[in-house]
Image (cartoon, rainbow, N blue to C red; front, side):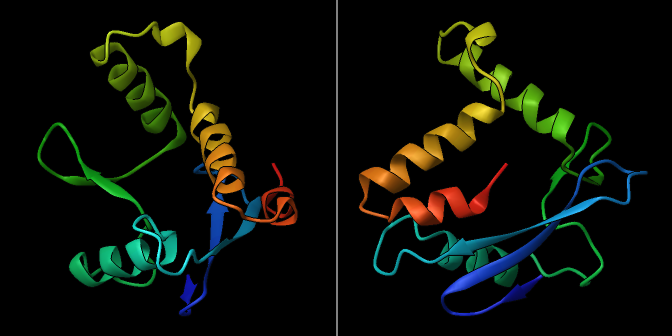
Length: 119
């Protein structure tokens, strides 16, 4: 991952054995309390790792750091939704993307940037 003051370039590998990758650019929301670039820079500063390590990791059942996979994320969304007393069958990991796009548009980000992220 390469990081600058205004954007983050992230390569996403879809499956452990899949060679297909997707490059996304995350733009800064300067001055916003939830500026994704600033939050990522803070995350990297407080969680040092080798450049070859996965970007997002979590403490597994055996207290060992493991990469956050799609299945982990999808399951986590369902667990959190259930804890909020909502119906987990109505939410999937794509709900995060939809909510992020809605929030970006509501904060005045040009629709081009939301479309630019693609699927």
